[in-house]
Image (tube, rainbow, N blue to C red; front, top):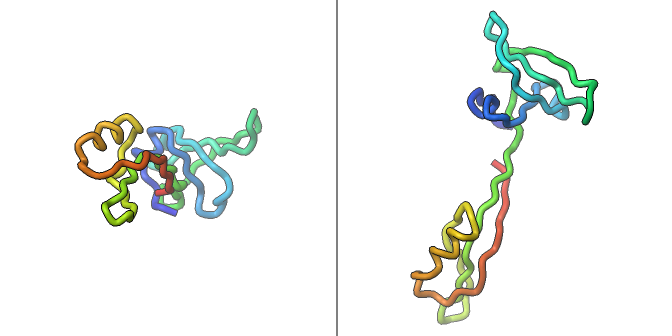
Length: 112
């Protein structure tokens, strides 16, 4: 897992404590000693607990990334992929001037 990223946690991205990697947590704030205060998401409704730990003991969860790529065919029949775009509309705009035989646009997803 990636090191704790305070700015990502402030934006709402979930993280875990290194000793409880299956227990997702959400950022709340800071204690006066600098420790991170967070809510442990133990149950869908209620039963969540407030805890704190130094940032060094926390890890960010992988983040899913979704992008759109155009698929092309060259004169030999080989397929190739274009650059990834954040939306299908942007991928569509990019394919208009490519000069290659367009096959389709596909959604791709990975974790960072």
